[in-house]
Image 1 (cartoon, rainbow, N blue to C red):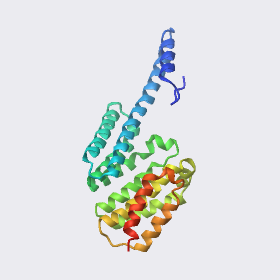
Image 2: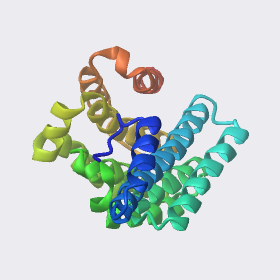
Image 3: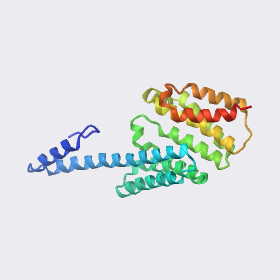
Image 4: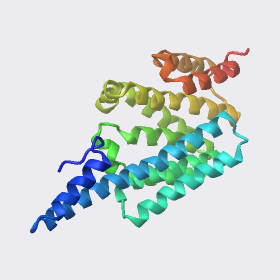
Length: 245
C-alpha cells in the first residue's frame, strides 16, 4: 500500500486489519505499519514547527509578548523531544533553524550564529530539499542577520548581499521562484528587511541611498501583495525610518 498525505486513517486501518489476518503476510503488515509511522512522525513534527511559527508571528506583531516567546520555545522543545525519541535525524536542520530564530528574538545572537551553522551542516537531509526548497538559502539569510547583530558587521552584510543575489542568479533560486513564489518572496525579502533593520538597530553607518534603493527593489517583487502582508508591513515600517528625512 502506497501511503501519501491523501491516505485516510480509516483506509489505512482497514487495510492493516484485513492484511494481518492473512497467514504469511506478517512481514508485509509490518512494512505498512512502519511506513505509516514514519509518515505520521513527520506530520507531528511539522505541526510543532507550524505552532512555533505561529507564536513567532505573534512576537513579530508585539515584541513585548514574552508569553508568546515562551510558547514558541515550548513548541520547539516538543519538536526536539519527538525528534530525539524517534531518531528523526532528517529534522535536525529544521530544529536548529527554529532554535536559531528563538535565540534571535531573545537577543542571544551569538547562540543564533552557532545554531544556524549547525543547521547548514544538516540541511541536505531536510525533507524540503526533495521538494525543491533550498533551505540553505533561508539559513544563510538568517545567519547573515545574526552575524550583524552579534558584532560581525562586515561579514554579515557581505553574506546578506551574496545570499540575496542567489535568489535571482542561481539555478536553485530561480527554480524556487517557479516552484513556490510565496516562499521565494518571503525568504528573499527577509534578507533586505533584516539587514536594514539590523543596521538601524545597531546605529551603524550605511549608505542611505543604497538601502532605500534595495528596499524599493525588494518591494517590487512581492506580487501578488495578498501573499506578503507581513513582509509589506515590515517594509512600510522601514520606509518610515529610511525616507523620513
